[in-house]
Image (cartoon, rainbow, N blue to C red; front, side, top):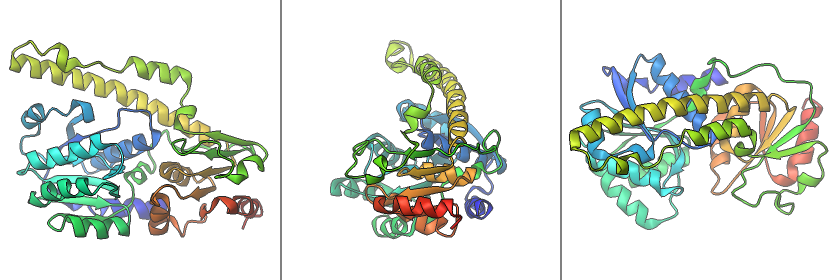
Amino acid sequence: MISHLSKKLYDASYLLDGYEEVVLLDYPKYMNIGDSLIWFGSLNFLRRLNVRVVDQFHVYQCDLDVLENVIGDRPVILQGGGNFGHCDQRHQVLRQRVISRFVDNRIIMFPQTLHFDDETAVIRDTEAFNLHPDLHLMWRDETSIKASEEFFPNASTYLVPDMAFCLEGLKPWGGVQTDNRDILFHNRYTNASGDVSQFPFIEKIYGLAEKDWEDIITEEARAGAFKARYGNFRKRIGFLPEGTRQSLFLKNCHKETAEWYKYARSFLEIANSEYLQYQVIITNRLHSHIFATLLRIPHLVLDYGYGKNGRFYNEWTVDDPISRLVKPEEVPDALAAFENGG
């Protein structure tokens, strides 16, 4: 299953044929381990293709004037994830600005899920995306593909899984599951954590631990990561000549990225160890499903919001016996089936 999904991603590698270097934009400098899984999978994907990431920037580092000097004629890689159209508009606005500015560069957006809540955003993005002559959009489900072909008919579209599946075989992920019979409910706290009416199984399952990504990260790791946060460095050097300012800004970006890479890796190691403590996982987070799939831990998947989890599951993992897509009221019976080996 895992090899099959990673192969689907490498099947699209021809988009980088003839290119030795790229610039990656919008890496996740925040404590969402799911997005770090995507980031590390993306880097591993490019490494295996012998494509060098000459620079990478998170959303607050993306000064377009600086980027123009860095990017040159290289392809631009836009980080994948689940925030296209409807979530944090910082990332959507960045994509729109980059696509509008770098019309002479090949731009490849790594796999996303598409969902628009705001019709105004559709109009804004449609204009920018359809004017770009070399735009390649990867999507994680058929619903996103159809919407993309409707909104962005001039862009090339590709149906592929999530970049996290390129973590296959990458150490230190993996290990041996413990004999602990506890169950983890990995609950996306954005939507009423602990709401028994929404998740009636919470009070019925003995030994159920309820956590989200931020609970899994240890206090020590969290404290170190906060120290690695940088203030508005650009503003502090604004009085300097432009050349000096850009040079110092890039040095600061490189230092910040290197430090965050170290912390993001430690977060994944912590999450890896945490997951292996549980016999079964219940989750309404897509990358909890993907992580448990990579680790081969039995788990139940609950849909969330506009149906992102179900769309991905039905597209890619429906035939994998390690997981099942269930409704909250079906959880106790599904757990019993796992215990009985069914």
